[in-house]
Length: 249
Length: 354
Image 1 (spheres, rainbow over the protein chains, first blue to last red):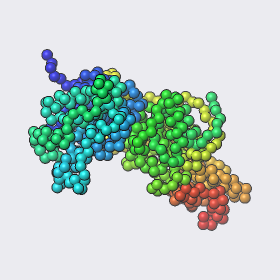
Image 2: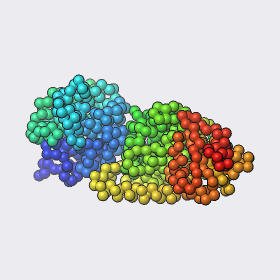
Image 3: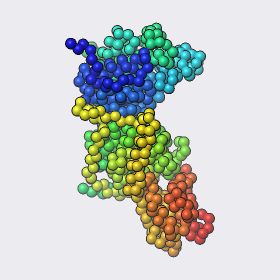
Image 4: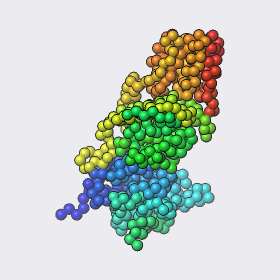
């Protein structure tokens, strides 16, 4: 009896991600959600600019790549042009919370019926570990070599808290991919974010706290612990907005 | 069925987009092209289309990218400063070989500049307007009628060659009212097997990207793109010739400058000066052959343009500098007068400095 298998929505291409990076887990969760909902044949993915720019090699889906930060705008165009398709973006923290903030906020405000998987690892990964809008206070990065200094560059952007203030979006949740327990919660949230779109509920964003052992200068194991010790206290996990439970109430 | 109506250039363009089968408009307000958005905000819902006011010009062009990925005819419109913002998207559209239709109703620059008409975005439009090697098909209407006709042609060219077709107009052509005949046409259906429609689990996945990390592969992409561009240059260059049969002085002008220049050429003819006009209708591809041919008998070329001298370089390139080419221009939102152009023709005819 097969109890676990590769989701059909994933290709067999080995990923290029570093050891200990959780992109692979998050890709799998997205693919499992697509399999569970039976929407592979009508799902279109949009890769960002960043470490996951090659995500189109790993999903068995029609896919494109957006310019840095523009994925929610590209998703809007795709979804409006063909509302029968299920459209998701997969974006990192530099992509979504810095250069693409306007596109993300306005797609949320319009309650665009799309799904966003927002992977937050508090650093620019692909370019070699620069400070991200989500880098923690005091965090040492290539461009904050003395630690992120509040006086110099302010404090991190909390995307879920910010977007939840808008009337538009249907579902905003933050999860983490650093433990079995957290991955299980993440799986449910991601599936819900896709189901919302299938049911026409509108904009759903799941922020997934992720690791970057390479640029954090940690072992994979220490990186998983750092998510627990440093990231989750600053970025509390939970559902920040859910219009469907409001309806249920 | 043809309908004759009195319309603004911008509105004629917008209605022609509907006739061309465009059902997806994404834009951001900017003067002097606002009538396009206003018109389509009313019209798109009537024809089951999408009008969406984007949060920025950048978002608008990337929404066009998305709709084009889906295989649909999509457009955006803006004016000079807004087109600068769209240059990122133009580059990605080109790198992904996607069709798109983009309108620039030019105003004076640089920077915020002014809101009066100009033709100072010629380089930006004809050289691609973004990073990397690419071109757009650039169409230059000189009347309200051409705002409509070139829009329909632009959508066809964009689909035929899988590239961006751009209308390079100006505040005058966009805002002025003229009689226009709007012909209902059946847009050509182009096969788009590359479109992102979902695999239906029946075919291999489609991927649309401009990313090629292997240099040899990326070089090949560029080379094959430019082979396509060569076909465009060979087949699609279009111009209007006026009084060119025996012309000694050839005025070259497009858009509103060409309207002014035509009057000046007629006035010169009335004075017995053998002047003529070549009006490029496509700015890219530039009507190089027509100019090369004219250089055989023309003594002096005049480039009339509302910029500090941009198109003049294409004229010099076309004729390989075998004849003198002089610039006649006004900038900052001022349109040259027929008198100014006539004076330049007279000077050139006497062999004097223009």
